[in-house]
Image (cartoon, one colour):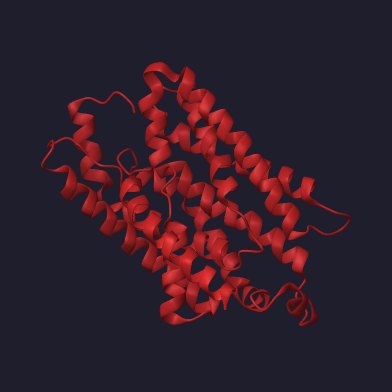
Length: 290
C-alpha cells in the first residue's frame, strides 16, 4: 500500500503483532449493536460511508510521512455526516420508520459503492491500496494508531452498554418496548451515533473485514442467550479471539508461498462467513415455512 524500507517493514512487523485483539474487541461490540435487532439498524452502508473516504485519502496522502494516520483521520469522522443525511432523509414527521431507514441506507450504500468503483478504475498504480481496504487487513496498523482512536472506542462502548436494557426490550418489538417506557426514536438516534463511532474507528484502521458482525453476535447469542448486558462484553471477547484465530490461519496459509507474503485476514473471515450466512438463511427460511 505504501513504500516501506526494510527497516520500516521490520518495525511494522514487530509493533503490530499485538494490535489484532483490540480491533476484534471493537468489531465485536459494534457488530453486537448492529445485529441486536435487524429491524432497527442497517450498517452495511455505514461501513462504506467510512470506508470510501479512506480510499479517497489514499490518492492525496500517498507521499505524506503520516500516511496511515491520515487515512484514519480522513475516514473516522465523516460517517457521521452520512449518518445525519440518511437519518434526515428517512424521517417521516417526527418518526423514522425502519423500512425507510433501511431503504435510504441501501441507496446510499450503492451510491458510495459506485464512487469506490470509479476510484478503482482511475486508480492505476494505487489499485493495490484500494484492494487492501476492500479486503481488510492488519499489516499497516500500529499500536499508536489504536491509541489515537481508543478514547472514542471507550466512550462508545460505555454509552452503548448503558442502553443494554432498552435493547432487550426492543427485541420484543417496537410496540411492546414503547408500552414499557422506551423512547424508541431517542434510543435509535443514540445507538446509531455511537455504533457509528465504534464501527468507523475499526474500519478506519483495518479496512472492511467482512462477516465478523454476522457470525460473532449470532454465535455468542446462541451460546449465552439474548441478554444484551451479557452479550456486549461476551461479543467483544469472542470477536477478538475470532480475529486472532483468522489471522493465524492466514499466516499459516501464506507461509509456503513466500516469506514476505501476508494474506489479508478479511479473506479468511469471508471464507468462513459465507457458509455461515447460507446456513443461517436456510434456517430462517425453514422457520418461516413452518
